[in-house]
Image 1 (cartoon, rainbow, N blue to C red):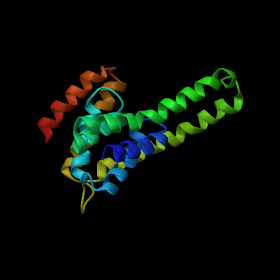
Image 2: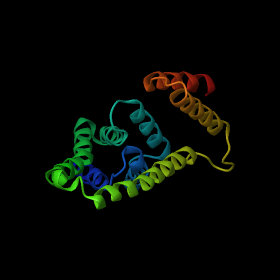
Image 3: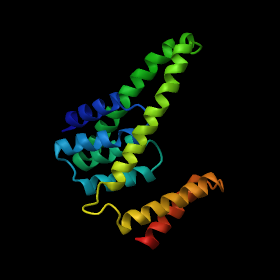
Length: 177
């Protein structure tokens, strides 16, 4: 089981470009393919991982590994998802000083921004609508959208610290749900 966790999260780590939120659906697909967690349990793990400090992908891998094989599973999944990035970053760092002024390299990174944004938006929509059956507009979704809009307003207009917004969101979730 430990090698399986290491292998699966290593695969996810190899393609995790754009941050943790961009690969949540890939993690869900891999975990569902193994039959480890149902959709509700996966959503709970992602929610908990999002509240913990650090990368949501790493936190999700750690929690999934722990749920499947205890502390050893948590370590295997965490190493699996982090190791590809570490190897790639070390490799790129060796050449980056020579390539950083190259216009093709700069242009390619600007071209990747819309793709990463699209992946994050897809993950948000997929995650937000995954528990709905029948009508897509439910009270739960409406409450979630209300909390989301409030968070965006607090952060963008009033410059409230993200930690305070997280705490306020938790309180709003208790009150609404």
